[in-house]
Image (cartoon, rainbow, N blue to C red; front, side, top):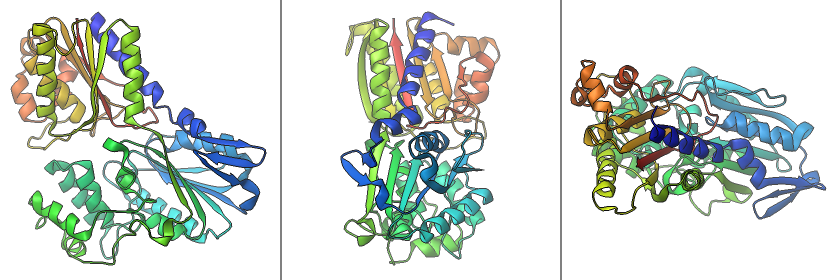
Length: 436
C-alpha cells in the first residue's frame, strides 16, 4: 500500500474515532447529585418514577452502553432495534437485531413493542430515546392496511430511483405509525429525552431517522409529489398510493402540545467527524481543507467533481498547493441501472478512478462511517492513478463495471475495498482526496 493510501486510511480512522457514540453521549449527558443535565436543560431524577430506554439505529448498542453507565439500576426496561451484527453486551436494555436497509418482520415486532412501552409510560416517567443512522428502516410500523411486504417494495423502489434522504424519509413518514413525530405523540404525557447521532446533511431533526420525536414539516402532498417526481406513484403498492394521496390527519407539526415535554439533542454528526479528519491530515503534514459537509447528488457526478479538484491542485496549486488534502462529508445517491454489487462509496471511488487514471500523485477514498456500504461488507473503497491500469491488466473494463453498478467486484479484483466491520456508529460518509 502506498504512503498516500496509508495516510488516507489514517485520516478516515480519525473521523471514525470522533464519531464514537459512547463518547458522544457522555459528552452531552451528565448526572451529579441527583441532577440530570442534558445540554442546557436540567432535570431532578427523583421527579421521575420510572425510566425507560427505547430507540433504533446502527449506533443504538453503543449509545445504550453509555446510558447504562449513566443510569444503571434506574432503568426499568428498554428495547432498541439495531442492525444485524451491531450489538453489545448490555444488562438492562434489550437489543433487537433486524433488517437494514430493507425492513423485516423482526424490525416490525420490535417497533410494536417499543410503541407499547412508550404508550404505557405515565406523566411522571422518563423515556430516553436513542436515534442514529438507519433508524428509518429499523423502526418499521406501517399504517394499516399497508403490510410490511408492501413497505419493503416501496423502500426498494425509493432505493433504486435515486431519491435523496429527505425525499425518502418524507414518504416513509407518511406510511408509518411512528415516524414524523408520532413516537412522541405516543409517549405524551411522559417526559421524553431523545439523543441523536446524525447521519443527515444539515442535522435536520425531522429528517434524521425520519424524525420519530421531532415536529414534522412535511405533508402527504409532498410525499405524493416525490413519488410522482421519480415516476413510481403507479409502481408502489395500491395501499401505499392510497395512503399518500390522503389529506390527513397529518403528522404532528411544530407547536403541537405532544412536544411540550420533549427534548431533542444532537450528540454527534458528520461535521464533527470531518473536523477530526481535518486535524489528522494537518498532523500528517498536509495542507488541509474541508470542501463541504453538505455534499449530495448523483454519486458518479460528485466523484467527477472531486477528481477535477485533484487535477486542479496538480496543475495550478488551487485551492491548495500539494501536499494537500481535501475532505468532504455528506451522503450521495446512486440511481441503480445495472445488476452489479456495490454501494455509493465504492461507486464514488470507481468513478473517480476513471478520471484520475495515470496520475501518480493522487489518492481518493470514500467510505461510510457505519462500516457498511450498500448491501456489502465493505465500508467503501480507495483508488489512485494506477487503479484503472491494474484493472485492465486483469481483464476488467472499468467503464462497463461502473455502468453495471458493479463496484464491489471491481475493487475485490484490483484491491482497494475498505472493510472495517460494524463500527457501531453512523454519521454519513467521509471522502478524502490526497495529492502528493
